[in-house]
Image 1 (tube, rainbow, N blue to C red):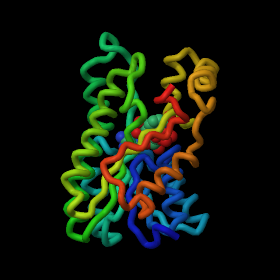
Image 2 (cartoon, rainbow, N blue to C red; image 1 turned 60 degrees about the vertical axis):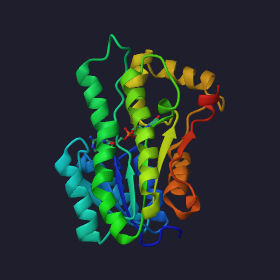
Image 3 (spheres, helix red, strand yellow; image 1 turned 90 degrees about the vertical axis):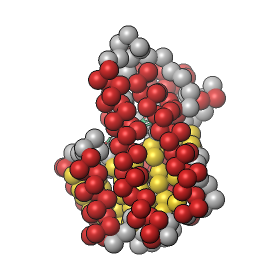
Length: 253
Ligand SMILES: NC(=O)c1ccc[n+]([C@@H]2O[C@H](COP(=O)([O-])OP(=O)(O)OC[C@H]3O[C@@H](n4cnc5c(N)ncnc54)[C@H](O)[C@@H]3O)[C@@H](O)[C@H]2O)c1
């Protein structure tokens, strides 16, 4: 087990990629704080982990609420003793061009995709410094490394998250804290439902994925979880400040 007894906190762990990441960390021996705004979803992930013989603690956390992030980091440190891994995963996708996106959409995207990651890192880093190191993974998107039509708020906030990740990596490398970004492409989770509607329905999105993605298909959450495990474990011990794109070749097409 490559994460034996490490304490990991994962936001948005009640579904999709966050859940698969929490499950693979638990399978590798970590104790996982399953943080999600949806309490039932968080509990369900924790139950799945326990049923598979792992250790998990569900915690209701809305990452857009500062007090919830404070409670989340305090729970890890005070109740579980430390925080070895922080995976900031919860995010929001608001579609639209400049004329369609409102200031409130821009604010919401920044608040969830960038500011929440910032604050969770800010709360966790003093503890990681004191304990001699730690690993942070910030979920961005391949939409943070290239451009897409009608995705202004999403792309702006995800690109900001990647640069913020690199800056944090630079500032904290000497404290043995590694900070990397995860940049998935199309992963089949409920997160894409609004995008499917924007494209005119699920069939249109399926066609788009088949025809546009070089590998010709969606990623599974299990495939993304393998990259998560790599980035939060010692397998990537010499990697920091990296934005790992896992997108079936979309960004090179
Ligand atoms: N699915 C994709 O194709 C894809 C691609 C690139 C990046 N991402 C990123 O992955 C994340 C979404 O993950 P997913 O695809 O597994 O989605 P998902 O919809 O399956 O799961 C998202 C989870 O996050 C939780 N959540 C939402 N808002 C929250 C909040 N404010 N506080 C706490 N929890 C909250 C939800 O309750 C849900 O359990 C986002 O950051 C998104 O930008 C997804």
